[in-house]
Image (cartoon, rainbow, N blue to C red; front, side, top):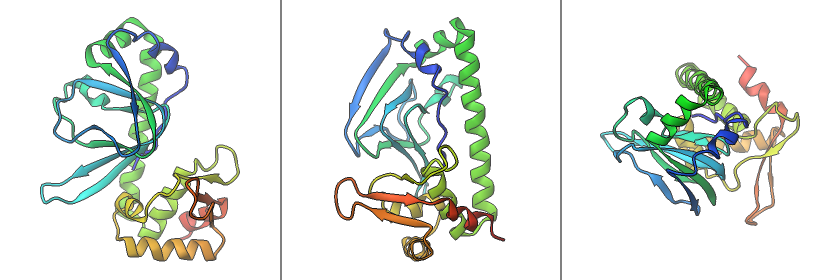
Length: 222
């Protein structure tokens, strides 16, 4: 479960990738690439949100990441990965830059500052993956759900409640934290009654979820 974002200065260098890059206008629920596809490009999210899912040999699907504006997809092709290990699907209308693998490698070689910033992004990504692994191994499903909601709400960046993904389904949340939909429903109702979260907008298209800083008590509580 990752939510890593890219340093904004990297976008300046990406403008140099005019040749060998394509802007994709992808509606909600469109597949950007599928698990098993040939890995020959890097993708950069310029607007919108993308969900990464993995399907096991037994057909079980898990959400392993939700990426937002500024994040990269498929960057492992730069170190020799030949096929995609996950499926990337838009969660909302998105604008995504597709950069050929060879073009991305040339950018990294020609612009040391770009390479430095990109390395910082990858290190942050690696740290978040490790945190997610610890979360899955040692925390209860209630704590995992609370942490996922806080991350989705960018907790700590502005010190106020923010709207999470509009109409994010309980099935998706369950897949993200490795539990059942019924458990997610139980904990969401509990969080709402305790005042940790609020539903906004009712049944409208712009409905969403507000997460309050008090939800952090669930994560910190032993």
